[in-house]
Image (cartoon, rainbow, N blue to C red; front, top):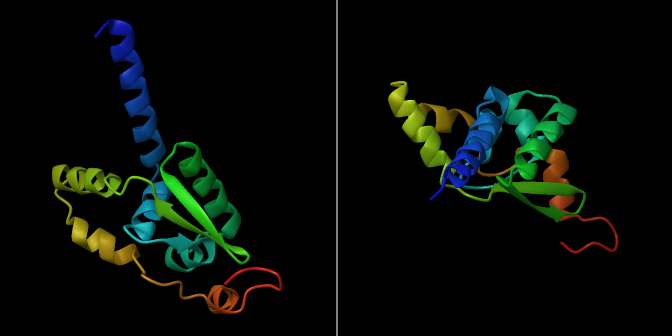
Length: 129
């Protein structure tokens, strides 16, 4: 492998670390965890404004870390590579932080927002459930 390829690979890895190095993006990724979450769910869990969450989700999607699916008016996000949680776990070990506490603080298996739950169970006319 030549120096150019090594430099390119280092730049790619560095870029991913920069994206996930943001505290708010790490919180979002932990909240999504191995499941999925919609913006309103992330609002409730994290206490951030919808616009701010949407901006951070865009950065994570552009980095190839999130996938999404639409259901009614709502978009649900999942991790493209759940292995990223392992990266957080290793970083927590290095920092001597209990990763289980971090994961439990953010993960919610189902959206708690009544608006979202209503939209899923009662889609707009012409939309599939």
